[in-house]
Length: 117
Image 1 (cartoon, one colour):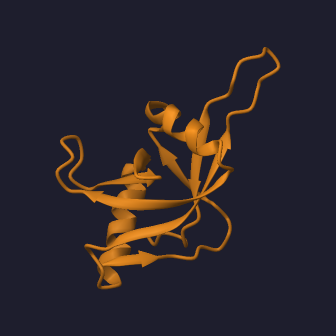
Image 2 (cartoon, rainbow, N blue to C red; image 1 turned 90 degrees about the horizontal axis):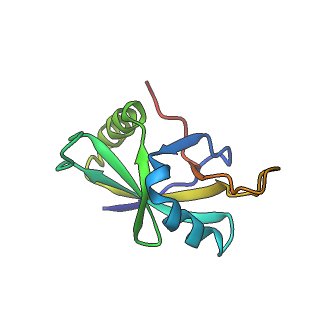
């Protein structure tokens, strides 16, 4: 099942682990700040069997935090869509030049409805 979610426009869900995927974010940022993200359940992730990966343009760009991944999975189950692949809007942030001339790291925020505790 493939679901597209329209969020409230707040882009309040941070994606973690993005420091490992700066090249993916930098390449995507060249096409603008707004993108469609795909959230993929990673049951076989060796570090966390509840992991939820976030993809941009078919490439992994980070993960939901451990806490948000569990809330997200619970929300999918409550909606009767526990195996769904969800697409939502994502915003690339950062990447600007600092006062010292260095480039700030890129970040990624998702436009999802509030995850229920």
